[in-house]
Length: 68
Image 1 (cartoon, helix red, strand yellow):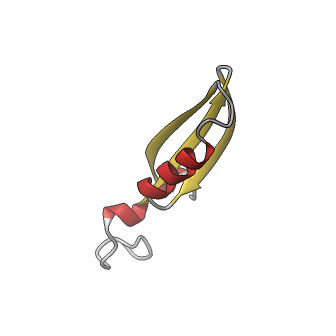
Image 2: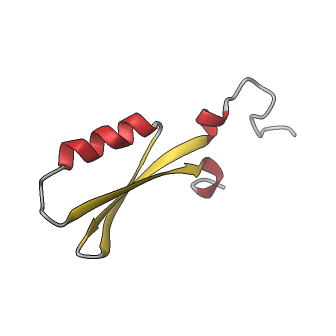
Image 3: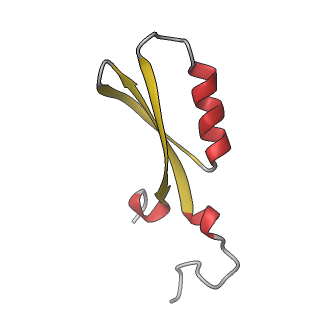
């Protein structure tokens, strides 16, 4: 397929972004996207303890769910 990036040395890691959601009191407050899991976890660690009920959800997401 032309233009998909497959077969051109693009790894699956490059086709995945990491979503970090911030939850407060059972409601989503903010979403951020990162190129690596480590970057998402560093972000969450930096905000750890800011609010007592701040929770984080970090998960991989295929890049095509972000950009079509």
